[in-house]
Image (cartoon, rainbow, N blue to C red; front, side, top):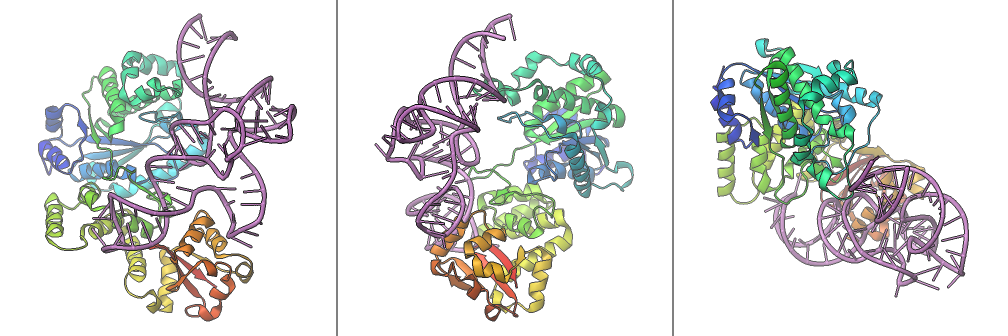
Length: 433
RNA sequence: GGCGGGAUUCCCGAGCGGUCAAAGGGAUCAGACUGUAAAUCUGACGCGAAAGCUUCGGUGGUUCGAAUCCACCUCCCGCCA
């Protein structure tokens, strides 16, 4: 082992990665030996998003420390839906849809942990494997018998649903924590897994699993939760105007991903460096000290953006993101070469082509909505009203809305076919004739 | 099964026959200030370039006029069984 359990836990704590922990001293001693650790990911969409990244990285950190990570994909639990701290009952997705998502999430999770490093190579499991054939009666007798409804309804994670006027909880969702408990007991039996990691909203479910493993397997298990990620301004972490920040490059391009990190508030950036990078605490402290003593813009966001993007999208993804960023945000974008434009397109800068017909008939508002730049024409109208729409660097106003044909004529294009449109300060789109 | 309560624009939430595209807050977008931050201030915030068009769970009805009243339906919640 590279570190003692105590060192390992202290490291995590120094990064503020520990919200709750069970059996403090015992867990530390337990981790002096190589152990198996699991974290579950339910397929609630076709991709994981930033919220999943912290526990996933904790799994990686534990693997680096010599433990065996087990990534559990919730093919079964995804069919049910976790009610923990959710305000409303959620609608169920079809088994076919979930099965498709399971495959995608398995692949994503697998990027982050090492499957080829000897004794502690990672494992991916699917809880559908031990629940699909389980009969309802067996489940009620073998699992349900170990859970007390009294304690389940007392749990904070479902209290809101039980107390709150106008909401309720179905038996299906209420039973969720039994399934998760079963997962822990099952992984304990199959792989001798003794630690579960999860978000702090998972604490209730994890504790349930620890109890079940003790009762069914006479095993002592532990839980560790990572804190809920918050932002200093109180808005939800991991959202942009386009919605969630996904790990799938098809859903959130490496460029957008990079930009997300670059725009993190100063008040959050050092915290996020601890969560989302593998830089040492000393390095992060040094960055913070340097920023504090320097004037102007801190360097932390740039470091965070590069580290996180490389971690999720690899060096090539980072390179593409940097190429676009440099082209758009430093210097004159009109200086770009023809090859540069082609590269931007390949690198994933949002692009679309223009047809003569559309240009003749549609106002800019409609053209930009069609291109996916904005959700509603109103945003364009608003921006035009403030002269903050730029076509190849030239500001356009409300009067230009109807003259798309002229604005996007070949004469005005760069290299006869490219238009780089900027809406507001940061939203770019490449149009091609 | 019985009895009550509810469904409003992304979210929360007012409205209870005309003055309602619908208060207020949050989120979001644009502008100023900046550092592609934060905070603050300004504007926008159903769709539409506009004329105008379509909304307040659904379907019918009463009325000159309905988110607001009536009937039925759907879904949700609570209490009791």
